[in-house]
Amino acid sequence: MASTLVRPRSGKVIAGVCAALADRFGVSRGLMRLAFVLFGLFGVGELAYIILWIIVPKAP
Image (cartoon, rainbow, N blue to C red; front, side, top):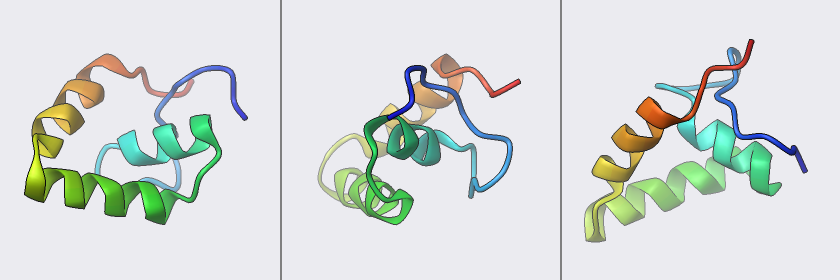
């Protein structure tokens, strides 16, 4: 498990938020993306994604 939360420069689809969270918590990137889609349908997934996009730094 990675110790920091950073958006990767490769292997991302839009901004790398799901990839960063998946790498940090040791789960599949596809599973994390699916969770965000479902959360967006039933909650505030889009807002959470945008906030994380702003807050989580890009990998060096």
